[in-house]
Image 1 (spheres, rainbow, N blue to C red):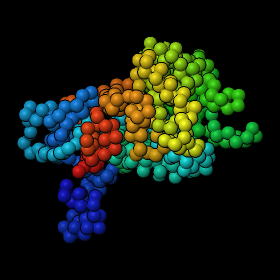
Image 2 (cartoon, one colour; image 1 turned 90 degrees about the vertical axis):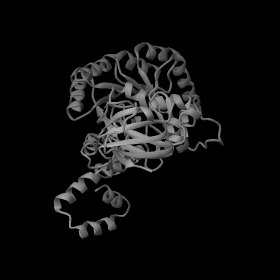
Image 3 (cartoon, helix red, strand yellow; image 1 turned 120 degrees about the vertical axis):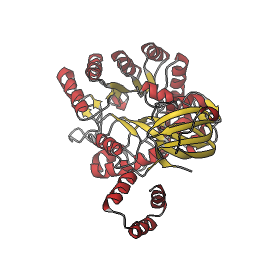
Length: 443
């Protein structure tokens, strides 16, 4: 069957001809259909991967090999120390670095780039059917770019479509990363959008909730509908003249965290203002998303409370370019200058960084853009960014079964050409993608 699967992936018509010629039973055809449903090929029961080097989520190890059995990593280490089981096959990966599947920390699979269609028009004019159909393509592109896990932080007006998308991936109906989904996300009444005029009531991009009863009900509803994470907008652009200002009160944010935590859910907060960040940190959220205007004092508080920052620098860069800024030609816009300063404040305070780009603002599959910009524009080393995108994100998001290469963890693996610990751009040269022992891309 593996040979026929390979033919189907490359030449569907030839496969169908061979299938008829061999007079396969309906049952056999069904098995093949199921195996290909998510466009991946199962590896043999045991598969030894032999790259030039292995990055284990922390350090680079030349001449290591990794043994995969079924959907788990069975062994990893120097070739002489890893025994090959009977019947196992070997896949040589010369010149490639094998590493854990990358983890995207901030994405919106139900959105596509704003220079294609504005956020307002996506929320108001695109049907949920079209948005979900597009999201299935986004999921596949994300996986083939080497990101085997993604936090999807809000459907932006598409209800709980992310829950269904996650189920379709889990069931093998479509290809995509393992998802942690936030459903509709929570906003204070009147603070979010779209806003067209004071006379029009239009669908909102998130769920409005206020006060004790309203907040408890909304959090419980999102959990009941399948949210893995509760996302809250601690501030938004509803201040005078459209400036960012806090939304929920300190007490409301604390209640959101308390209600979610009692059901084992983490809360993450969109927050860009110092006061919005302060309230969210004191309420007990686990990550601050964006943090554009964070001050040294706020970042020291984050460090003290163990709250991580997901800076989403690629989204800021993309939006500036959509507004006409030409990278390399024009002076750095003030908002990007402020962003670079805030990230430096965070680094100086010792705040843990999560890697996530706010993908959806820019194209899915271009997730590596965040990693590249953190190195090029923000002074991080390739090794720091690789650690963030693998073991670091796994620890922040409580994913103990992935993010590293060691026995017993999920066989979510990616191989790239070159050495990404020296040149982070190597993560774009993805040659192999494996998720749960299933090969979705191979040399």
